[in-house]
Amino acid sequence: MLGAHYRVWQNGKERKSGFRSFVVSGEMENKRAALVTGGTRGIGNAIARRFAADGWNVAISGRTLESVRTALAAFQKDGLGVEGKSADSRKEDDVRELVEFASERFGRLDVLVNNAGIGDFEEITRLDPKDFREVVETNLFGPFYGIHFAAPVMKKNGGGFIVNIGSLASVNAFAGGCAYNASKFGLLGLSDSAMLDLRPDGIRVAIVMPGSVATGFAGGQADGDSWKLSAEDVAQAVADLVRYPERAIPSRIEIRPSRPPRK
Image 1 (cartoon, helix red, strand yellow):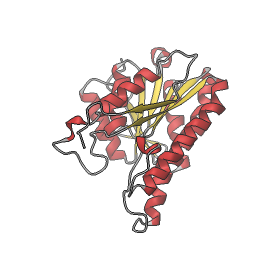
Image 2: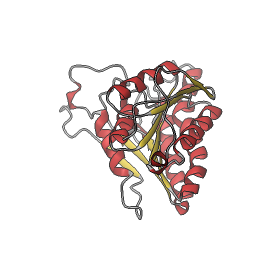
Image 3: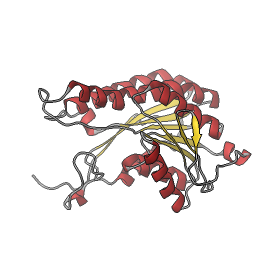
């Protein structure tokens, strides 16, 4: 497992984080490496934690430097070595620099998890166009940028795995979800198309589509959320997915709570 030290970067410059930096070693370069966007909280945090606990080199991103520093301090407290860089998934240059950061830091990139996402839920005539744009740029443009920049790195490694975190909202529309549905329906199409484009190069692409997850994403957690999926359930699916035999691509994974309340 990695040591507990890390570096935090912002806008291409290293910033002090209060902990010593890693020294690149042959051991680090030989480990499998994963980059998880939106890894500071929720599902992304659980996925990054699972990869780190399994002995992977792991890098995460968050929209703000402070969110990255807070998440990395929690990993460090638990003895998990994770590195991080602030990046806004809506910005092409941020995502390019993020992929460069992870691949240069670890000497390779085996897995990219496009997890960063937001939701703005409002009836279509009341939703501000700028909010619609922000949701689509984060949830759809961000994964496109990630795939676009990570795939050439993975080709040099001889292959890799790209996992997009979608939602059952990728296939099921709901009232008040025009922005979220549009972004997640689009992400499903992006995933399927990228899978067809990249599989000849040994790069597998899949989308994981969870149902209700108790992360507080859409309005906060409640006492009656125990029936919902946990972030760790989704992390388990991702961990299993990237270890799937190389001859096969489970390209669409739907995950539902096993015992939802009766309606």
